[in-house]
Amino acid sequence: MEKNRVKSIIGVKELRENLDKYISEVNNGRSFTVVRRSEPVFRIIPFDDNDKNEQWENIIDFTKIKKGGVPLNDIRKALSRLNNGSAS
Image (cartoon, rainbow, N blue to C red):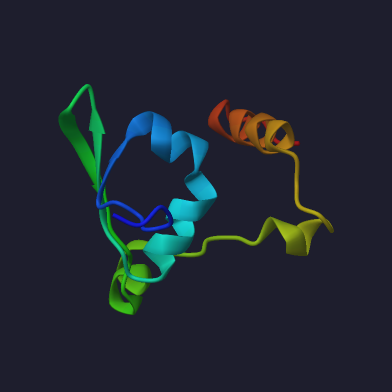
């Protein structure tokens, strides 16, 4: 097997250490089975265009509220206030 060839079965550690490489491969249509202690744990498969449209919905673009986005803690605080029924 070539040194640069990407395997279809990879370990969790290998995935973690080379995540960018595997994301690129998945974006190019490759699929992988991820194993831990020689047991299959999950599969990584590419989305097709239909999957993206059916499973993901954009609710809000926080970069339109504030350049660079909104800090997660600010969002959590605002949601907490909404859940507790108090206005800002």
